[in-house]
Figure 1 (cartoon, rainbow, N blue to C red):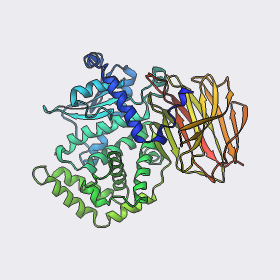
Figure 2: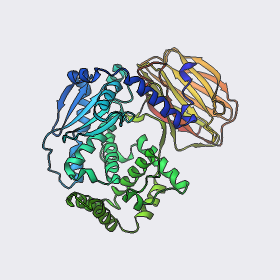
Figure 3: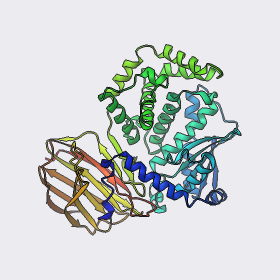
Figure 4: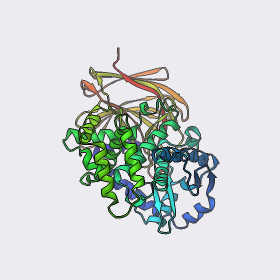
Length: 482
């Protein structure tokens, strides 16, 4: 079952993930000669009120969706800057690349590999030019894009990089902005705006589960549990370099989210006004820090600890990407890496029932996974649904990265692009899988733990694939069975 070979990857660690990703990026770079010029020639340009989108190797529909993702960002940042009526001197440029190869070619030309693995960047040229560059991610087939519009992760990254451009234009002194503001503003604007793009109202936006935000919160709460949570005063002073890069991003994102809440939002507005008015120059960073410390007061460290402990995450992404979509979730794997997300509220009682609908969209990968029973040793069970085939039940054992097949079911109704209804019910060592009116019984090699952790996955593509699995989870919920 080569299509299942990578599901163990999140268990084996981030180092393996990055090694595979970097190998893939290096391989892609070999194909890039001449791609940049071809992309430039083929770019579709659409202009909004504040931004213009250059869509490389895409179509008018992709360009229009990208413009809808970035153009409102200006007004959001302008309001934060205290300049709601401001306009840019000229439209800000955002480049969206239909392929990762196209992004890598542009990135290599501009920054020589510095932001290759990011797949998104804001570029500030020595000649004063500024532009944002984002790869459509995870890669999808044309059929999948017609079904979902743009991946939620792409929407977030477009808004994230557009925020960087708007911030520099509206606040000035852009070379010396503190990192808590740079990363915090980008994450907050991008995620709150992307929530609205998937259909949430302004009132609902912060209640919509957003897995990238939740994953940041899980990382920060883990720091707190390990007594390594940096104090808010250290984040303000940009003195958290001892943290890994991704965790630094997470700490700043959660910190800024707290500042935007009702307890601190008015003081934040005062600090941002000072940040904009100080005018840069020698000692700018020290003046901003002193103003922020005085404004927020000595209680900020305690407020941050309380905020971190009081927040509740719904999802933790081991590997991207799970995003909200039309009452459910879209889950899309990168071509050579599975997408895996674990729900953060286990089901108590040694049993669970996971029910909902799934729809596997066209792509090189065709497998969506219901995961459950994860233990402290990172063992778990998987029901692997494969379009135009059926499903297989696996037990994964982290020791030795061993997969054990527990049985399979042939399900003719599970077809590519067609919605199927499923139920996975496990109690003790008994497992019942129901799919479109059919059912199968299996015996698990070990009973479920008292608290049953469950998750969702989408499989990477086969070797050499251009896309992984893309699919929709509709109205999926886990409960204790009756």
